[in-house]
Length: 407
Ligand SMILES: [Zn+2]
Image (cartoon, rainbow, N blue to C red; front, side, top):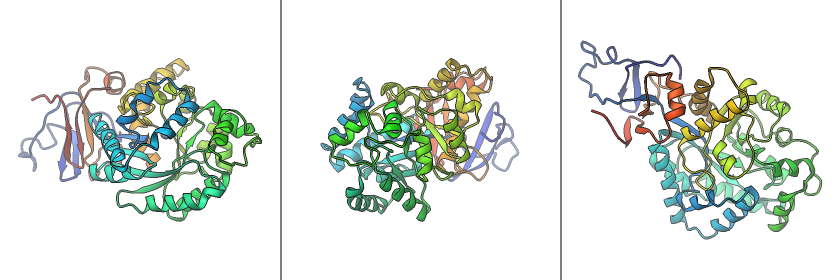
């Protein structure tokens, strides 16, 4: 993703780092210093490890029936909330493990993972997935902030990989709690990752404090100052007003945004993680993918969780984004390239880690191979055929998934 695609290429790895990337005849070829390096041959296209910019690994396989339940978003989140109460720590660990393995089997080596319960931190750390675990709070109003803060501190103190903070949404937290969480993250140099502008219900709640999310707040006894009032503006504008956007933030979804909202996101250098299959399943709407690309907003790709997506195969979402952008009138020939960039270096920007999503000397040896046709544009081929075709995944120099390898 930092240069032209290389035909008949090779990656030379030592330990967990990349030493060289180039043509196979040159990298480790006869006469080179590495001529007797062990060679693994693959057919297809080798890419940097994909970066999933929005997932909830804890909502793993046991929640998969919710993705086919046909429930629209607001009913779905009520059912999800009820289901959570019946899970033990061991159940959460097992669920997160199931999700993590799906990531590795589909070529993803880094993930922005929302952690609601805690066990997700240990699972991603043990598996070695790169990225950030964003500890989430939801359902917290001013009265519940002390308890919420205690929970947050407990999850932030767990041993494991890098931690960030996810103030869940503008409709499950009071404005005070939202801003306190933002301030806490900044005081500790942690990244932020809220859900934003996902549904029309959210847009209505922020605008006027009414609708199904007002009922949702009442149902759970939550007291929010937006209730019955709103702020008379969009979710993106309100999030910005609360200090919740910036280069240290990336947001999930960004479905209900207009050109002015996209300008606000750009001004704040905030990456949007697009999750098209989840949006479709939850009947949340369709993000303005063509608008984001035409306006040069920074974008990344996420799957969301198995509770709202049929799989964690990032390239399935990439292909869906391609179809949406075309339907919305995006005609430039760079579409496939830009979407593969979103799934790699776009995710790296979202996570604030410039080592991710690229293969370069000195960088981490994280990559994936997809058994797709190589007689056409490689980006078009990956987007069109990549889903389900990952035959090898290497994470930190170790082969962590192996499918149908050719000799
Ligand atoms: Zn989510």
